[in-house]
Length: 226
Length: 271
Image 1 (cartoon, each protein chain N blue to C red):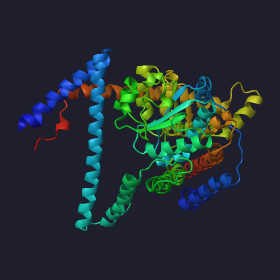
Image 2: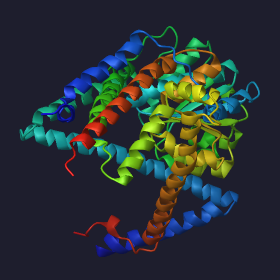
Image 3: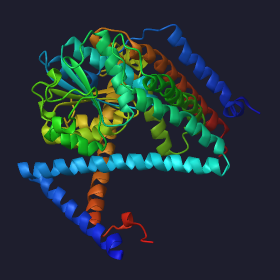
Image 4: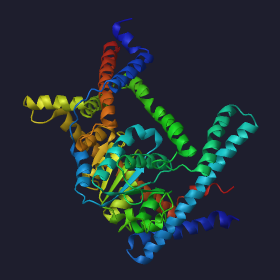
Protein backbone atom coordinates (compact mmCIF):
# COMPACT_ATOMS: atom_id res chain seq x y z
CA UNK A 1 0.00 0.00 0.00
CA UNK A 2 2.94 2.29 0.65
CA UNK A 3 3.66 2.22 -3.10
CA UNK A 4 0.24 3.74 -3.89
CA UNK A 5 0.53 6.31 -1.09
CA UNK A 6 4.13 7.36 -1.61
CA UNK A 7 6.02 6.18 -4.69
CA UNK A 8 3.21 6.33 -7.26
CA UNK A 9 2.18 9.96 -6.53
CA UNK A 10 5.84 11.02 -6.69
CA UNK A 11 6.28 9.31 -10.08
CA UNK A 12 3.03 10.83 -11.43
CA UNK A 13 3.97 14.33 -10.23
CA UNK A 14 7.46 14.04 -11.72
CA UNK A 15 6.25 12.79 -15.11
CA UNK A 16 3.35 15.24 -15.43
CA UNK A 17 5.44 18.16 -14.15
CA UNK A 18 8.33 17.54 -16.55
CA UNK A 19 5.99 16.88 -19.46
CA UNK A 20 4.15 20.19 -18.94
CA UNK A 21 7.35 22.20 -18.49
CA UNK A 22 8.73 20.87 -21.78
CA UNK A 23 5.38 21.19 -23.56
CA UNK A 24 5.04 24.85 -22.48
CA UNK A 25 8.42 25.83 -23.95
CA UNK A 26 8.21 23.81 -27.17
CA UNK A 27 6.10 25.60 -29.81
CA UNK A 28 4.86 22.50 -31.63
CA UNK A 29 1.25 21.42 -32.39
CA UNK A 30 1.93 18.18 -30.48
CA UNK A 31 2.93 19.99 -27.32
CA UNK A 32 -0.11 22.30 -27.66
CA UNK A 33 -2.31 19.20 -27.70
CA UNK A 34 -0.62 17.97 -24.52
CA UNK A 35 -1.18 21.33 -22.79
CA UNK A 36 -4.79 21.50 -23.96
CA UNK A 37 -5.48 18.00 -22.64
CA UNK A 38 -3.75 18.77 -19.35
CA UNK A 39 -5.81 21.96 -18.98
CA UNK A 40 -8.98 19.94 -19.54
CA UNK A 41 -7.96 17.45 -16.85
CA UNK A 42 -7.05 20.29 -14.55
CA UNK A 43 -10.50 21.89 -14.95
CA UNK A 44 -12.25 18.55 -14.41
CA UNK A 45 -10.27 17.98 -11.20
CA UNK A 46 -11.05 21.51 -10.03
CA UNK A 47 -14.77 21.04 -10.66
CA UNK A 48 -14.69 17.71 -8.81
CA UNK A 49 -13.01 19.50 -5.90
CA UNK A 50 -15.86 22.02 -5.97
CA UNK A 51 -18.40 19.20 -5.55
CA UNK A 52 -16.30 17.71 -2.75
CA UNK A 53 -16.17 21.12 -1.07
CA UNK A 54 -19.95 21.53 -1.17
CA UNK A 55 -20.42 17.98 0.12
CA UNK A 56 -17.97 18.60 2.94
CA UNK A 57 -19.78 21.84 3.88
CA UNK A 58 -23.17 20.11 3.96
CA UNK A 59 -21.91 17.15 6.01
CA UNK A 60 -20.12 19.44 8.48
CA UNK A 61 -23.23 21.51 9.20
CA UNK A 62 -25.52 18.49 9.13
CA UNK A 63 -23.40 16.86 11.85
CA UNK A 64 -23.53 20.05 13.94
CA UNK A 65 -27.32 20.20 13.69
CA UNK A 66 -27.84 16.49 14.44
CA UNK A 67 -25.59 16.65 17.52
CA UNK A 68 -26.99 20.06 18.50
CA UNK A 69 -23.45 21.32 18.97
CA UNK A 70 -22.81 24.85 20.20
CA UNK A 71 -23.84 27.41 17.57
CA UNK A 72 -25.84 24.89 15.54
CA UNK A 73 -28.38 27.64 14.86
CA UNK A 74 -25.88 29.18 12.44
CA UNK A 75 -25.73 25.84 10.63
CA UNK A 76 -29.51 25.99 10.24
CA UNK A 77 -29.12 29.44 8.69
CA UNK A 78 -26.64 27.92 6.21
CA UNK A 79 -29.29 25.40 5.10
CA UNK A 80 -32.02 28.05 5.12
CA UNK A 81 -30.19 29.91 2.32
CA UNK A 82 -28.22 27.06 0.76
CA UNK A 83 -31.17 24.78 -0.07
CA UNK A 84 -33.43 27.36 -1.80
CA UNK A 85 -30.46 28.79 -3.73
CA UNK A 86 -29.44 25.36 -5.03
CA UNK A 87 -33.01 24.20 -5.75
CA UNK A 88 -34.13 27.36 -7.56
CA UNK A 89 -30.75 27.69 -9.30
CA UNK A 90 -30.89 24.15 -10.65
CA UNK A 91 -34.58 24.22 -11.57
CA UNK A 92 -34.98 27.71 -12.98
CA UNK A 93 -31.41 28.75 -13.76
CA UNK A 94 -29.68 31.98 -12.79
CA UNK A 95 -29.36 33.58 -16.24
CA UNK A 96 -30.02 37.29 -16.55
CA UNK A 97 -33.45 37.88 -18.17
CA UNK A 98 -33.69 39.29 -21.68
CA UNK A 99 -35.94 42.24 -22.46
CA UNK A 100 -39.56 41.29 -21.85
CA UNK A 101 -38.67 38.10 -19.94
CA UNK A 102 -39.34 37.69 -16.23
CA UNK A 103 -36.33 36.97 -14.02
CA UNK A 104 -35.68 33.42 -12.80
CA UNK A 105 -36.04 32.97 -9.02
CA UNK A 106 -32.35 31.97 -8.73
CA UNK A 107 -31.31 35.14 -10.55
CA UNK A 108 -33.64 37.25 -8.42
CA UNK A 109 -32.23 35.74 -5.22
CA UNK A 110 -28.65 36.37 -6.33
CA UNK A 111 -29.29 39.98 -7.34
CA UNK A 112 -31.60 40.88 -4.44
CA UNK A 113 -30.14 38.91 -1.54
CA UNK A 114 -26.51 38.02 -2.18
CA UNK A 115 -25.42 41.20 -3.98
CA UNK A 116 -26.90 43.71 -1.45
CA UNK A 117 -25.73 41.64 1.54
CA UNK A 118 -22.15 41.40 0.29
CA UNK A 119 -22.12 45.05 -0.81
CA UNK A 120 -23.38 46.04 2.65
CA UNK A 121 -20.66 44.02 4.38
CA UNK A 122 -18.02 45.62 2.15
CA UNK A 123 -19.43 49.12 2.65
CA UNK A 124 -19.33 48.71 6.44
CA UNK A 125 -15.54 48.86 6.06
CA UNK A 126 -15.84 52.63 5.58
CA UNK A 127 -16.90 52.95 9.23
CA UNK A 128 -14.28 50.60 10.64
CA UNK A 129 -11.46 52.02 8.51
CA UNK A 130 -12.36 55.54 9.66
CA UNK A 131 -12.27 54.50 13.30
CA UNK A 132 -9.06 52.51 12.82
CA UNK A 133 -7.38 55.38 10.93
CA UNK A 134 -8.16 57.72 13.82
CA UNK A 135 -6.91 55.33 16.49
CA UNK A 136 -4.08 53.37 14.91
CA UNK A 137 -2.46 55.54 12.23
CA UNK A 138 0.01 57.32 14.52
CA UNK A 139 3.43 58.86 13.93
CA UNK A 140 5.09 56.60 16.52
CA UNK A 141 8.37 56.20 14.63
CA UNK A 142 10.19 57.60 11.59
CA UNK A 143 8.89 54.75 9.40
CA UNK A 144 5.32 55.25 10.60
CA UNK A 145 5.58 59.01 10.04
CA UNK A 146 6.79 58.55 6.44
CA UNK A 147 3.94 56.12 5.80
CA UNK A 148 1.43 58.52 7.35
CA UNK A 149 2.58 61.47 5.24
CA UNK A 150 2.57 59.42 2.01
CA UNK A 151 -0.89 58.03 2.83
CA UNK A 152 -2.30 61.52 3.45
CA UNK A 153 -0.69 62.78 0.23
CA UNK A 154 -2.10 59.95 -1.90
CA UNK A 155 -5.53 60.31 -0.30
CA UNK A 156 -5.64 63.97 -1.34
CA UNK A 157 -4.23 63.16 -4.78
CA UNK A 158 -6.83 60.50 -5.46
CA UNK A 159 -9.89 62.76 -5.14
CA UNK A 160 -11.05 65.82 -7.12
CA UNK A 161 -10.13 68.16 -4.25
CA UNK A 162 -6.46 67.24 -4.80
CA UNK A 163 -6.77 68.00 -8.51
CA UNK A 164 -8.37 71.37 -7.73
CA UNK A 165 -5.68 72.38 -5.20
CA UNK A 166 -2.94 71.18 -7.60
CA UNK A 167 -4.40 73.29 -10.40
CA UNK A 168 -4.53 76.40 -8.20
CA UNK A 169 -0.90 75.96 -7.09
CA UNK A 170 0.14 75.28 -10.70
CA UNK A 171 -1.50 78.50 -11.84
CA UNK A 172 0.35 80.34 -9.05
CA UNK A 173 3.65 79.23 -10.56
CA UNK A 174 4.46 75.80 -9.11
CA UNK A 175 6.21 73.95 -11.99
CA UNK A 176 4.14 70.78 -11.48
CA UNK A 177 0.69 69.78 -10.26
CA UNK A 178 1.53 68.99 -6.63
CA UNK A 179 -0.98 66.32 -5.60
CA UNK A 180 -1.91 64.95 -9.05
CA UNK A 181 1.66 64.59 -10.39
CA UNK A 182 3.01 63.74 -6.94
CA UNK A 183 0.55 60.88 -6.50
CA UNK A 184 1.31 59.61 -10.00
CA UNK A 185 5.03 59.66 -9.19
CA UNK A 186 4.48 57.77 -5.92
CA UNK A 187 2.37 55.13 -7.68
CA UNK A 188 4.65 54.79 -10.72
CA UNK A 189 8.05 54.91 -9.04
CA UNK A 190 8.51 53.83 -5.39
CA UNK A 191 5.26 51.83 -5.22
CA UNK A 192 5.89 50.05 -8.55
CA UNK A 193 9.47 49.30 -7.48
CA UNK A 194 8.29 47.77 -4.22
CA UNK A 195 5.54 45.77 -5.96
CA UNK A 196 8.02 44.46 -8.52
CA UNK A 197 10.32 43.30 -5.75
CA UNK A 198 7.43 41.49 -4.04
CA UNK A 199 6.28 39.95 -7.33
CA UNK A 200 9.78 38.76 -8.23
CA UNK A 201 10.11 37.24 -4.78
CA UNK A 202 6.78 35.45 -5.16
CA UNK A 203 7.65 34.23 -8.67
CA UNK A 204 11.04 32.88 -7.60
CA UNK A 205 9.42 31.17 -4.61
CA UNK A 206 6.83 29.55 -6.88
CA UNK A 207 9.56 28.29 -9.22
CA UNK A 208 11.61 26.97 -6.30
CA UNK A 209 8.61 25.26 -4.70
CA UNK A 210 7.52 23.78 -8.04
CA UNK A 211 10.99 22.35 -8.68
CA UNK A 212 11.03 20.89 -5.15
CA UNK A 213 7.61 19.27 -5.71
CA UNK A 214 8.47 17.91 -9.19
CA UNK A 215 11.69 16.33 -7.94
CA UNK A 216 10.05 14.92 -4.82
CA UNK A 217 11.99 17.05 -2.31
CA UNK A 218 8.82 18.74 -1.05
CA UNK A 219 6.39 15.98 -0.05
CA UNK A 220 4.02 17.65 2.42
CA UNK A 221 1.15 17.36 -0.12
CA UNK A 222 1.28 13.57 0.37
CA UNK A 223 0.15 13.90 3.98
CA UNK A 224 1.63 11.90 6.82
CA UNK A 225 0.79 8.57 5.25
CA UNK A 226 -1.40 7.25 8.08
CA UNK B 1 -8.73 65.41 31.58
CA UNK B 2 -7.34 67.81 28.96
CA UNK B 3 -9.00 68.53 25.59
CA UNK B 4 -6.48 66.37 23.71
CA UNK B 5 -6.97 63.46 26.08
CA UNK B 6 -10.70 63.71 25.42
CA UNK B 7 -10.00 63.65 21.70
CA UNK B 8 -7.94 60.47 22.11
CA UNK B 9 -10.77 58.82 24.03
CA UNK B 10 -13.44 59.87 21.52
CA UNK B 11 -16.20 57.25 21.31
CA UNK B 12 -15.97 55.52 17.93
CA UNK B 13 -19.75 55.85 17.49
CA UNK B 14 -19.30 59.62 16.94
CA UNK B 15 -16.94 58.81 14.08
CA UNK B 16 -19.47 56.32 12.66
CA UNK B 17 -22.19 59.00 12.84
CA UNK B 18 -20.09 61.62 11.04
CA UNK B 19 -19.04 59.07 8.39
CA UNK B 20 -22.70 58.23 7.73
CA UNK B 21 -23.56 61.93 7.38
CA UNK B 22 -20.63 62.90 5.14
CA UNK B 23 -21.28 59.92 2.86
CA UNK B 24 -25.03 60.54 2.65
CA UNK B 25 -25.02 64.28 1.94
CA UNK B 26 -23.22 64.15 -1.46
CA UNK B 27 -25.51 61.28 -2.52
CA UNK B 28 -28.62 63.34 -1.70
CA UNK B 29 -27.15 66.60 -3.04
CA UNK B 30 -24.42 65.82 -5.63
CA UNK B 31 -21.54 68.27 -5.46
CA UNK B 32 -20.43 67.82 -9.07
CA UNK B 33 -16.73 68.06 -8.23
CA UNK B 34 -14.53 68.35 -11.34
CA UNK B 35 -12.52 65.24 -12.28
CA UNK B 36 -9.13 65.47 -14.01
CA UNK B 37 -8.31 62.77 -16.56
CA UNK B 38 -5.18 60.75 -15.76
CA UNK B 39 -2.98 59.05 -18.39
CA UNK B 40 -3.80 55.67 -16.78
CA UNK B 41 -7.51 55.93 -17.63
CA UNK B 42 -6.82 57.50 -20.99
CA UNK B 43 -4.68 54.46 -21.82
CA UNK B 44 -7.72 52.17 -21.66
CA UNK B 45 -10.09 54.68 -23.26
CA UNK B 46 -7.81 55.45 -26.22
CA UNK B 47 -7.06 51.78 -26.86
CA UNK B 48 -10.80 51.10 -27.27
CA UNK B 49 -11.51 54.38 -29.05
CA UNK B 50 -8.89 53.57 -31.70
CA UNK B 51 -10.34 50.13 -32.51
CA UNK B 52 -12.10 49.87 -35.89
CA UNK B 53 -15.88 49.41 -35.80
CA UNK B 54 -16.91 45.75 -35.46
CA UNK B 55 -13.66 44.65 -33.77
CA UNK B 56 -14.06 41.76 -31.33
CA UNK B 57 -13.32 42.58 -27.69
CA UNK B 58 -13.14 40.21 -24.74
CA UNK B 59 -14.32 41.52 -21.37
CA UNK B 60 -13.49 39.36 -18.38
CA UNK B 61 -15.83 40.36 -15.57
CA UNK B 62 -14.03 38.93 -12.55
CA UNK B 63 -15.60 40.60 -9.53
CA UNK B 64 -17.68 39.48 -6.57
CA UNK B 65 -21.05 40.90 -5.47
CA UNK B 66 -19.33 42.82 -2.66
CA UNK B 67 -17.41 44.85 -5.22
CA UNK B 68 -20.39 45.75 -7.42
CA UNK B 69 -20.66 49.33 -6.05
CA UNK B 70 -17.12 49.95 -7.26
CA UNK B 71 -16.85 47.67 -10.31
CA UNK B 72 -20.34 47.95 -11.84
CA UNK B 73 -19.98 51.68 -12.67
CA UNK B 74 -16.64 51.18 -14.47
CA UNK B 75 -17.92 48.04 -16.24
CA UNK B 76 -21.00 50.00 -17.32
CA UNK B 77 -18.85 52.84 -18.67
CA UNK B 78 -16.56 50.40 -20.51
CA UNK B 79 -19.45 48.44 -22.06
CA UNK B 80 -21.24 51.67 -23.03
CA UNK B 81 -18.06 52.74 -24.82
CA UNK B 82 -17.75 49.37 -26.60
CA UNK B 83 -21.38 49.37 -27.73
CA UNK B 84 -21.19 53.00 -28.86
CA UNK B 85 -18.24 51.98 -31.04
CA UNK B 86 -20.24 48.99 -32.31
CA UNK B 87 -17.57 46.57 -31.10
CA UNK B 88 -18.48 42.89 -30.80
CA UNK B 89 -18.39 42.20 -27.07
CA UNK B 90 -17.69 38.76 -25.60
CA UNK B 91 -18.10 38.56 -21.83
CA UNK B 92 -16.76 35.83 -19.57
CA UNK B 93 -15.40 35.30 -16.07
CA UNK B 94 -12.75 33.21 -14.37
CA UNK B 95 -14.36 33.38 -10.90
CA UNK B 96 -17.56 31.44 -10.02
CA UNK B 97 -19.67 34.37 -8.75
CA UNK B 98 -18.57 36.44 -11.72
CA UNK B 99 -21.39 34.74 -13.61
CA UNK B 100 -24.00 36.58 -11.53
CA UNK B 101 -22.29 39.96 -11.49
CA UNK B 102 -20.84 39.89 -15.02
CA UNK B 103 -23.85 38.59 -16.87
CA UNK B 104 -26.09 41.06 -15.05
CA UNK B 105 -24.13 44.18 -16.01
CA UNK B 106 -23.65 42.95 -19.59
CA UNK B 107 -27.41 42.29 -19.92
CA UNK B 108 -28.29 45.69 -18.42
CA UNK B 109 -25.99 47.74 -20.65
CA UNK B 110 -26.71 45.76 -23.82
CA UNK B 111 -30.46 46.20 -23.33
CA UNK B 112 -30.01 49.91 -22.67
CA UNK B 113 -27.94 50.25 -25.86
CA UNK B 114 -30.38 48.14 -27.90
CA UNK B 115 -27.84 45.40 -28.73
CA UNK B 116 -28.70 41.90 -29.86
CA UNK B 117 -27.39 38.83 -28.07
CA UNK B 118 -25.37 36.52 -30.29
CA UNK B 119 -24.71 39.23 -32.90
CA UNK B 120 -23.45 42.20 -30.90
CA UNK B 121 -22.52 40.48 -27.66
CA UNK B 122 -22.54 37.21 -25.77
CA UNK B 123 -21.60 35.87 -22.37
CA UNK B 124 -19.56 32.68 -22.28
CA UNK B 125 -19.87 32.06 -18.54
CA UNK B 126 -17.33 30.68 -16.10
CA UNK B 127 -14.44 28.27 -16.47
CA UNK B 128 -12.75 26.82 -13.41
CA UNK B 129 -8.98 26.92 -12.93
CA UNK B 130 -7.93 30.43 -13.97
CA UNK B 131 -4.47 29.85 -15.41
CA UNK B 132 -5.49 26.65 -17.22
CA UNK B 133 -8.56 28.32 -18.74
CA UNK B 134 -6.58 31.33 -19.95
CA UNK B 135 -3.87 29.15 -21.53
CA UNK B 136 -6.64 27.09 -23.08
CA UNK B 137 -8.36 30.16 -24.60
CA UNK B 138 -4.97 31.14 -25.99
CA UNK B 139 -4.92 27.86 -27.88
CA UNK B 140 -8.59 27.54 -28.82
CA UNK B 141 -11.58 29.54 -27.61
CA UNK B 142 -14.04 27.11 -29.16
CA UNK B 143 -12.48 24.11 -27.40
CA UNK B 144 -12.54 25.95 -24.08
CA UNK B 145 -16.13 27.17 -24.46
CA UNK B 146 -17.96 24.88 -26.87
CA UNK B 147 -21.18 26.85 -26.27
CA UNK B 148 -21.93 30.24 -24.80
CA UNK B 149 -23.96 30.52 -21.59
CA UNK B 150 -27.19 30.23 -23.58
CA UNK B 151 -26.27 27.00 -25.35
CA UNK B 152 -25.28 28.52 -28.70
CA UNK B 153 -22.39 26.90 -30.56
CA UNK B 154 -19.40 29.25 -30.24
CA UNK B 155 -18.04 28.18 -33.64
CA UNK B 156 -21.08 29.61 -35.45
CA UNK B 157 -21.92 32.68 -33.31
CA UNK B 158 -21.77 35.90 -35.41
CA UNK B 159 -20.28 37.82 -32.47
CA UNK B 160 -17.30 35.45 -32.54
CA UNK B 161 -16.89 35.50 -36.31
CA UNK B 162 -13.15 35.29 -37.07
CA UNK B 163 -12.26 34.66 -33.43
CA UNK B 164 -10.60 31.31 -32.80
CA UNK B 165 -8.24 32.13 -29.94
CA UNK B 166 -7.28 34.89 -27.54
CA UNK B 167 -4.96 36.70 -29.94
CA UNK B 168 -7.86 37.18 -32.38
CA UNK B 169 -9.50 39.62 -29.98
CA UNK B 170 -8.58 43.24 -30.67
CA UNK B 171 -8.57 44.03 -26.94
CA UNK B 172 -8.99 42.33 -23.58
CA UNK B 173 -10.52 44.33 -20.71
CA UNK B 174 -10.26 42.74 -17.28
CA UNK B 175 -12.68 44.12 -14.68
CA UNK B 176 -11.45 42.65 -11.42
CA UNK B 177 -11.45 42.89 -7.64
CA UNK B 178 -8.83 40.18 -7.19
CA UNK B 179 -5.51 39.24 -8.75
CA UNK B 180 -7.05 37.68 -11.88
CA UNK B 181 -5.22 40.31 -13.96
CA UNK B 182 -1.93 38.62 -13.02
CA UNK B 183 -3.06 35.41 -14.70
CA UNK B 184 -4.46 37.24 -17.73
CA UNK B 185 -1.12 39.01 -18.22
CA UNK B 186 1.15 36.03 -17.50
CA UNK B 187 -0.79 33.35 -19.40
CA UNK B 188 -2.70 35.58 -21.85
CA UNK B 189 -0.89 38.77 -22.80
CA UNK B 190 2.64 37.37 -22.56
CA UNK B 191 1.82 34.30 -24.64
CA UNK B 192 -0.45 35.81 -27.30
CA UNK B 193 0.47 39.52 -27.28
CA UNK B 194 -3.19 40.61 -26.95
CA UNK B 195 -3.63 44.20 -25.72
CA UNK B 196 -4.96 44.32 -22.15
CA UNK B 197 -6.61 46.97 -19.98
CA UNK B 198 -7.09 46.78 -16.22
CA UNK B 199 -10.31 48.01 -14.61
CA UNK B 200 -10.15 47.30 -10.90
CA UNK B 201 -11.13 48.28 -7.39
CA UNK B 202 -8.99 51.01 -5.83
CA UNK B 203 -7.43 48.44 -3.50
CA UNK B 204 -6.22 46.35 -6.45
CA UNK B 205 -4.95 49.30 -8.54
CA UNK B 206 -1.40 49.34 -7.08
CA UNK B 207 -0.98 45.75 -8.27
CA UNK B 208 -1.63 46.84 -11.87
CA UNK B 209 1.10 49.52 -12.02
CA UNK B 210 4.08 47.18 -12.59
CA UNK B 211 2.22 45.75 -15.62
CA UNK B 212 1.44 49.24 -16.93
CA UNK B 213 5.02 50.45 -16.55
CA UNK B 214 6.27 47.32 -18.33
CA UNK B 215 3.77 48.12 -21.13
CA UNK B 216 2.00 44.78 -20.58
CA UNK B 217 -1.29 46.63 -20.14
CA UNK B 218 -2.39 49.82 -21.88
CA UNK B 219 -3.88 51.51 -18.82
CA UNK B 220 -5.64 51.31 -15.47
CA UNK B 221 -9.14 52.38 -14.48
CA UNK B 222 -8.86 52.22 -10.69
CA UNK B 223 -11.84 52.46 -8.34
CA UNK B 224 -14.59 55.06 -8.46
CA UNK B 225 -12.02 57.73 -9.40
CA UNK B 226 -11.06 55.81 -12.53
CA UNK B 227 -14.71 55.10 -13.28
CA UNK B 228 -15.64 58.77 -12.97
CA UNK B 229 -12.76 59.72 -15.29
CA UNK B 230 -13.99 57.17 -17.85
CA UNK B 231 -17.51 58.59 -17.57
CA UNK B 232 -16.14 62.08 -18.15
CA UNK B 233 -14.31 60.89 -21.28
CA UNK B 234 -17.61 59.43 -22.50
CA UNK B 235 -19.40 62.68 -21.68
CA UNK B 236 -21.78 61.08 -19.19
CA UNK B 237 -22.31 61.53 -15.47
CA UNK B 238 -23.41 58.23 -13.96
CA UNK B 239 -22.86 56.08 -10.84
CA UNK B 240 -19.07 56.49 -10.60
CA UNK B 241 -19.22 60.29 -10.78
CA UNK B 242 -21.98 60.38 -8.17
CA UNK B 243 -20.06 58.05 -5.85
CA UNK B 244 -16.88 60.09 -6.36
CA UNK B 245 -18.42 63.07 -4.54
CA UNK B 246 -18.96 60.94 -1.43
CA UNK B 247 -15.50 59.44 -1.72
CA UNK B 248 -13.91 62.89 -1.99
CA UNK B 249 -15.69 64.12 1.13
CA UNK B 250 -14.92 60.97 3.15
CA UNK B 251 -11.23 61.20 2.15
CA UNK B 252 -11.09 64.77 3.45
CA UNK B 253 -12.84 63.71 6.65
CA UNK B 254 -10.33 60.88 7.13
CA UNK B 255 -7.42 63.27 6.58
CA UNK B 256 -8.83 65.64 9.20
CA UNK B 257 -9.33 62.93 11.84
CA UNK B 258 -5.94 61.37 11.13
CA UNK B 259 -4.23 64.74 11.62
CA UNK B 260 -6.36 65.42 14.71
CA UNK B 261 -5.54 62.00 16.17
CA UNK B 262 -1.82 62.55 15.64
CA UNK B 263 -1.84 66.02 17.19
CA UNK B 264 -3.66 64.57 20.22
CA UNK B 265 -1.15 61.72 20.36
CA UNK B 266 1.87 64.06 20.25
CA UNK B 267 0.34 66.50 22.76
CA UNK B 268 -0.42 63.80 25.32
CA UNK B 269 2.67 61.64 24.74
CA UNK B 270 4.75 61.13 27.89
CA UNK B 271 8.44 61.54 27.00
